[in-house]
Figure 1: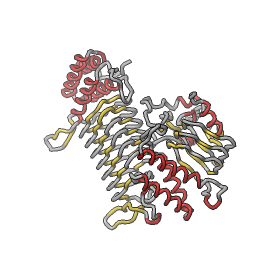
Figure 2: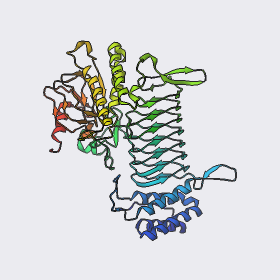
Figure 3: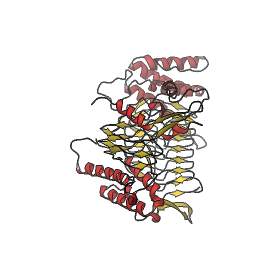
Figure 4: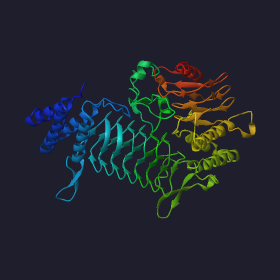
Length: 537
């Protein structure tokens, strides 16, 4: 069924726009091309109808039936990709600035909001476009996507969008909130010299909704369904089954929903070189699969950026009295020439960002340094554990179970196993001299290979969305504050791709509490239900 587009108040121009929009949605290829040109002309001649024309273009693009990131040779788009590209090209052309008599750059169609929610876009060039508000939630961008120099007066909304190729936001200016929660970047992503005036949100991709006092038990299927469907773009991430993250989480008294979730995913290199964050920069639970360059960036408010891959050389931070969380091994120092400077933290020497190195041998050396630091300085252990877990959340670009791996891939797996072994070795209470008590493992979305926590003791672990490969051992483990394997309603669940041993395990309790009906589940029961639901090999 086509989208319903409400146009104007019924005048002749309104009728013409409505008729052209109908031909665009339902005519043959030739009629559709003519409709694109007719809508553009009507928008040019009638400024009061430009938003209606823009919405007609967007509604047409949103109707693309295919959701496959890599479509087959058979074109499933009855309208043809050329017409959709033509509609977007016309829209982009009208959103670009033209110098006016006063010399100011104003878009030909000014103050236009764009809504491409759920659309499939086969390459788009929005270079230098001016948006009022633009919504690209759950949008699949196939082909190079360019927003270089674009400006948003309002919010730029990209939650759960997938960029299958390059994503270019160099020099973009976000006047409102920039929302990229749980977006997935499968190629290089460039935000160099971008300016974020509002909140820069790359954290988990759920929408927050306030708890309704009349809502039933949130662990009930019907209540969970009310929180919205999960994303419809196929989950084509190496080594990962779809965790089915929710599209909403409850706010207010019911805080358990905020435990899980996943941030944006960058498979390729991510560059924020010289970017300016004038409001909070939120990269909580973001997964960087390659270099994450923040060289020369400016942070002017709260910051949550703790991934080891982040390179903060020459970055500056003001408002250091606010919460600012940096990767282990980075710290701020006052500067005479302006805001505080990010620099290597000599207090944790000889660790100096080795986990961010491209060479596997350097990363292995970094793990040995962190191991020794934690033994010698108990006050650093929590930060070290968080850093190692953040490393394990880095996605692997090759199949874990492949029969033949090249030398670089085998080295990468060796580092991952070494990181797991570091944690496991420090969680064994029988080895009192090496035991790090009360450890908390933030491993949401991690890829784990032959994880062995048998006979270990720790406080807590977040395994929501984690992918367990090989043999996983929880036999004899004790979690004093519980382990989390999924979110309420079954979303955000961990996946086990191999055998699991859990005899004698005490995984603690999951505490799912609403204002109406407190509920308590054992994590062991959840684990067993996940294992029972696995398809037969």
